[in-house]
Amino acid sequence: MPVSGWCVWVTGLPGSGKSTIAHLLAEKLRAFGIHAYVLSSDELRKVMTPNPKYTEEERDMVYATLVYIARILTENGVNVIIDATGNRRRYRDEARRLIQRFMEAYLKCPLEVCVERESRRGLDSYGAPSGIYAKAFRGESKTVPGIGAPYEEPLNPEVAVDSDKLSPEECAERILKVILDRFNPMP
Image (cartoon, rainbow, N blue to C red; front, top):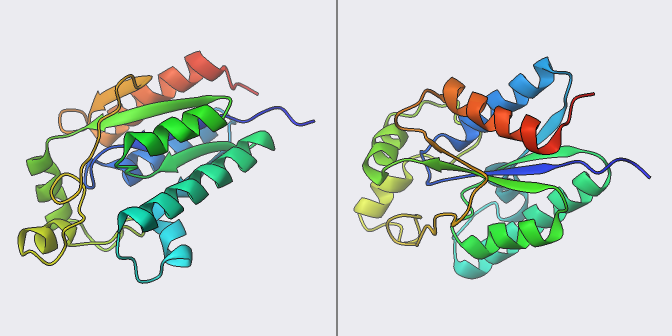
């Protein structure tokens, strides 16, 4: 039976830096000889819902699948970093319930900063859709977390970082420290 992997869900509003920080975190872990797979909701959506509507029903399905995949991977010894907004607390709570070694990393970032970041994001955005806040402000999308759909902040995340005040590198370092303390994953 393989040793159980662990899972860290990097959550926050769109534009808070989740993808950038998740990938930096994976790089930092590799430097310690620890492999972690970045499981992206944006990449999963491309397969499950190629023309996403971001309805509650669709989100329920995508997040249930995301948690299922993370659970299966961790049960087979794979460490997982979930890169996903997970706008409803219940999605992250379900992951916590089903994944034995789980933690939340919350990227706190004011909506106005997220909007500004998202509006100037380049093409390399790890598969995230672009222009979502602009569409929301024009009334073309009513499902953007923080504007038309709720974003329920974690109540007790294992780590919270102010991604508007710290660099992505500093955020990844702080999350890394908690992972190393909590899971002791050194090979």
